[in-house]
Amino acid sequence: MRLTFNPATLKFRLTVLVIGLVLLATSVLTFVSLYLAERQMRDVIGSQQVALLSSAAAYIDADLEARQTLLKTLREELGRTDGKPDGGLQAFLEAHSGLRDEFFNVVLLDGGGTMLANMNDRRTNNTVNFGKRAYFTDTVAAREGVISRPFKSALSGKPVILITEPVYDADGKLVLMLGGAIDLQRPRFFGQLATLGSGATGYLFMLTSDGTVIHHPNKERILQRVQDEAGGVTPSTKAALGGFEGWVESPTKRGVRALITYKRLRKTDWIVGAVYPVEEAFTPLIRMRPTALLASVAVAALAGLAGWLAILRLLRPLGELRGHVAGMVDGTVGIDVFNVRRRDEFGELSRAFFTLSQQRQEAEIKLAAQARTDILTGIDNRRMFEETFAAALARAARADSVVALAYLDIDHFKAINDTYGHKGGDEVLVEFAKRLRAAVRSTDSVARLAGDEFVAIFEGVSNDAEPAILAGKILDMARTPFLCAGKQVQVTTSVGIAIGGGGASMEDYLALSDEALYAAKADGRNRFAIGRLDPALAQGARASVRAGR
Ligand SMILES: Nc1nc2c(ncn2[C@@H]2O[C@H](COP(=O)(O)OP(=O)(O)OP(=O)(O)O)[C@@H](O)[C@H]2O)c(=O)[nH]1
Image 1 (cartoon, helix red, strand yellow):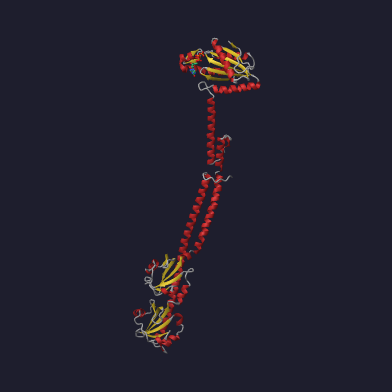
Image 2 (cartoon, protein in one colour):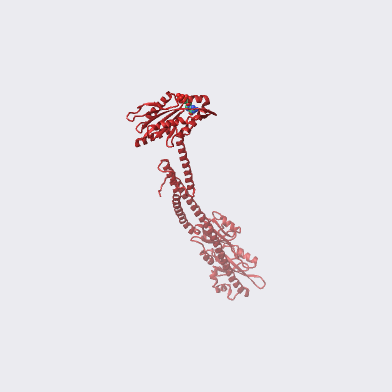
């Protein structure tokens, strides 16, 4: 198989097209697959994040509930003593050392909000009043425990939330209020939540429904309202504050594109959120991208190579066909080289070329024959005569045989034309040629040279008497009247014969036969004269002319 890189060839262009299309197809396929995989992965990760966050929310709810339950237990204990436990309130709190595990501080306020006891610093007892705090008034109004909004503790200065439990006496009068504080910067359950963040930099955060940050890896943001921060509230958080739960792909406040998931707690109106940077979420896919693209290019290259080889193979018959046609043009091969048995388009093309070539060959043969035929009479013309006579002379020279050339001219043909018209003259010429052809042997040649002039070539003349016999036959064939323009017309002819061997030239023969014809005409027409060429003489030599008949 010959490999060529000519950009003008069909092979080259088809190969480029195949490689280009395969490359395009694989690239598009790869990009679409990656895109779909990313979308699907995003949905899966989003759902995972929702599930993760739901369990985190459930965990926080359970944690808050456990702490509320703990405070309720204390409340019941206090209730049983009408808020006056043995040893006093401070001792009561200190006796429950397990509270330290659950709360940053536990305070006991009286019905007016004055702090009577606390776990952290007994010196502050009876020095502060929290009667105006929202958690106090909310608890009084609700007549049951609340989970406060986050606030800055007056005692510790830390951001905290407070879980309250009111203690009523038998008359239903508020005698005490228990308050368990949770340090938002070191909350036990949030600390555990921090480990739930996805990826290397993913994290969880928590807001109240009015946008106050309860938990965030950046501690400085705690107690800030997202609306008041630089950059304002992000669109996704805005939606979450408006009630949205679920996941979205959206930029964070720092401009990092992330899957952000929001979920509301059951026990409070807090919103817990999870941030998972997209780049980390899609790390496997992003890592896969160059490999996938490389693989698609490799596949395209292989497919292109295979396509190229297939094209070379498929188009081989075209190359052969082209070679055949070129061979025919320069004449090195014949039309039989075409593979006309193939069933495909190349076979059809070969067959079409074959038919075309056949037709051309036939036309050439026909043209060649026409070029050597006298149109009016259908016998040989001068050109054919010259070829035939030259060949006859060559044969005679080889065989050392005798050739006779008879030169005929219809007598007074002009008068026939004048009397019966040109058409009538033509009829005579046609009939004359027909009779001349019939009068000689099939191996002898007859031709019309021009007008009413005809010739006959006789090869292998064996004796001196033969030319006269042949001339006599020619004169005889004219004796029967000719039908000319519907009339019977008597026609005669004069014949001049030249006899010689293969050594004489065609010109010698023509000149001598013409001379003999002239002699026959001069002698009265309707007769023949024979001249013999002397081979010993140079061209143009004349022998004796004698009238026959
Ligand atoms: N009908 C017809 N006439 C032709 C054709 N070609 C030549 N002629 C005529 O044939 C005549 C030939 O006359 P010539 O051979 O010169 O003279 P002729 O009348 O035959 O007299 P002789 O040969 O001396 O007997 C001329 O009148 C030509 O015009 C042809 O194809 N058809």
